[in-house]
Length: 186
Image 1 (tube, rainbow, N blue to C red):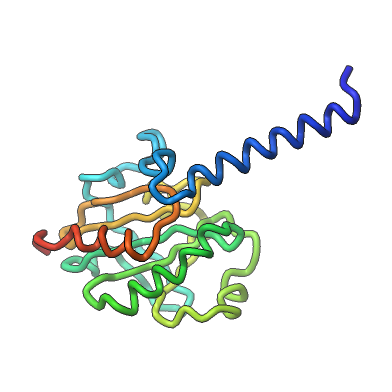
Image 2 (cartoon, rainbow, N blue to C red):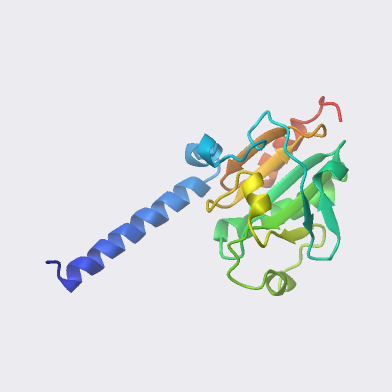
């Protein structure tokens, strides 16, 4: 029979391991965050596949429909308010949206909502970054997302997924991913 101190120590050790794994996945360039296992990638969301069309409603009431973005590179950031690495990289996506008119950027809040997203966003200034919430998880699942956040998905102007990975990104990494689209036809 375990003692109360033993149970507390075991719980603490498991928490440390979980935090270490979360940190390892979210480090830029981490091989753990580079590619999601095939079982997590939704149909059509793997690199090299054509992503199926979807529509989400942005927090400003307008709609984002993937097929209407053809001819432009699309960058989707799957994030959550409770995810510290997600929140840390939001300014990078806002900057990309502000500086690259040829790129369509969307920050999609996962269905793992733990607080009012619009109230959360009201406290911050992301003037160029359009936000949407996926209340039932359908779109996040279509994009290959799960509980590992953040996730970035890049779709070429012709609708092909060119990047789909969990883990944090920097502005420089985003510009490289978008720059890789030059030479592709829209």
